Each structure stands twice: as structure tokens, then as C-alpha cells.
Image 1 (cartoon, rainbow, N blue to C red):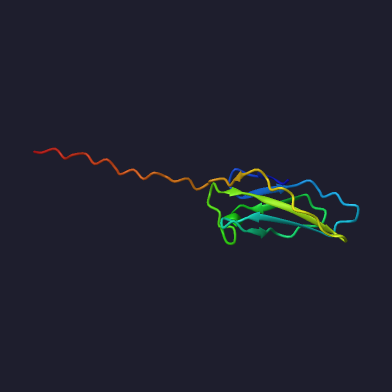
Image 2: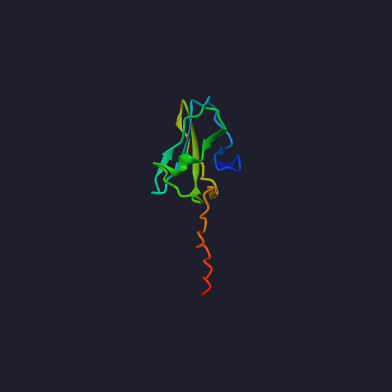
Length: 118
């Protein structure tokens, strides 16, 4: 099962890590997918066959195809392939909330003092 960890306090990067696949044959490919706002799984950038981590730009989760809002939940799963074909998908990670670095700022109307009558 993958784990997602924020890498900075500026909402720029998240690291996805997972235990390497066990296989009696050398791995040929590893694939990571994450769930979009529409409930569909979308591929993440390509990693090497034996990779166990991927660092991603958080902005990528906010645009197509993911379209997740700030504070949205990210779920990912991983699988690898050997000469025997693809293995099964790992269970997805526990819910990971994207950081919300764009908090809503309340706009306060300025106080206008009543003018004194002369």
C-alpha cells in the first residue's frame, strides 16, 4: 500500500512511497495510478521498474485529469510487471488530504465613523 507524505510547507511537493514488489522474475515495469475527482484512476509519471518512491508536484492534482480541490483526498495504488505479466494492484493508501495553501481570507468592510454634526 502506498504512503503519501508532504515534502514542504508550501504545498509544492508530495512524495508517494510503496514497498517494492516481490517477484521471482526481474521486474520490467512499475505503474502508479491515483484517483481523480471523477472517480476514475489516472496514471502518474513513469518510474523505473524497481522504484519505490515518486515525488510529484501538488499542482498536478488540482488540474486535469485529477481536478482535486485544495484539501481534497488523494488515493493511489501501485503494481509491477515481470515477464509473467502484471501483478495485482496494491490496496490504495489511507486518505491523504492535499494541503490547503489558499485559505479563504475574510474581507472585512472598513469601519466608517459617523461624521459629527456641526
